[in-house]
Image (cartoon, rainbow, N blue to C red; front, top):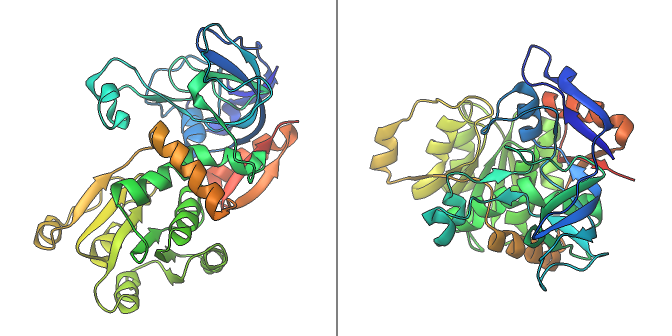
Length: 348
């Protein structure tokens, strides 16, 4: 089968590690199904793998890709009656758990210390004509979403959903600041929060991206920088927002702490601009702020996300779609950050 994979990791030119060619057709094992992939979205996780930044040891060649939507085309042994029948359109849940630690049997399996995603460890990714996943990880695709839109649900939308509604516990009428306005996580957070009845403020350095954020559901778009917190306070009558969705890091951390209301929440799921900003502990304890980390989301959260997106008619923001011949260009755009929304690879 055709696939996009890393032939090596690290080095001064990570994109040179990417190749497109033939890999063995995977066969589903016990409790697994094989999905004929129709669409995949790119994530920073894929580029980090090429750079050699991995959470688990990887032995190249390794097929990249964490998200996918497609059609079930084969069953392994003992998949059970709940496995989607062959021919079912599905969205792939990208997380796997160890299944033996206390967290896996507790209320929040995302606290599993050994959870992995597609393309981690010894698991091949989804940027291929076929991918094998546990039967329960192939979730029926909402009819309202096409394959490209459905493929956006995995990493970015699931992470945003957990940040907004599980960690920050936002409800209709609450106000949220989304730091950044271009990547998949930020655009997902904008669309989800707006659809949930929250007031959404977006901060970005780019005037073009601020305008685009308003088009997909943001209520206010302000310029990032030293005056951003003052702008948020003006928009909220001096109180600040109920929560901040933070994935930028050092460049925006000061704004996030100053823009959130007393007793409010800053949810962190990334640090693309640096992971060691000044902590400003006095502000945190004096204003009784909650600083919460968040990563991906559980299977029940994924199912609730799909239902919510379907019911509210949300159409993910897709920056561009590429075929096999455009995959390297797609990775170049991913690495540069020059896009608004998700980058999709459609597999014919």
